Image (cartoon, rainbow, N blue to C red; front, side, top):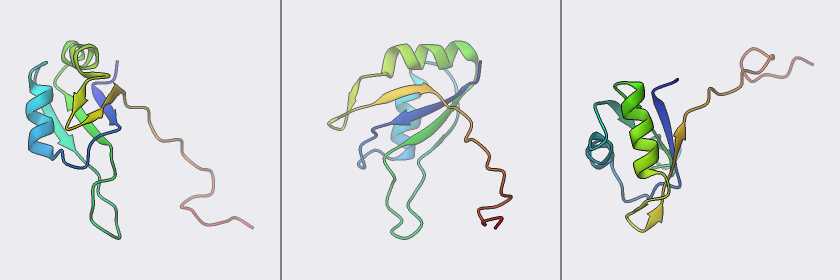
Length: 94
């Protein structure tokens, strides 16, 4: 199992230290990253949290999925790899 979690429906008021503290209640946290919009620099409403091991990841999913944080109900699950495109970098082949 992948130890990297996707956290969706994240409040814009939650920062990375808060996220790390919240998830650390379920085990060791390797990293917590909230992607920012390139143009505005604002959070995009989701995050990735890498847990130390599978048991911690499973505990975080069970304990935090559906829980309300800063007024929003978070969705927590295993992060799925982004599908790779065949065009080699976003350019059209035609």
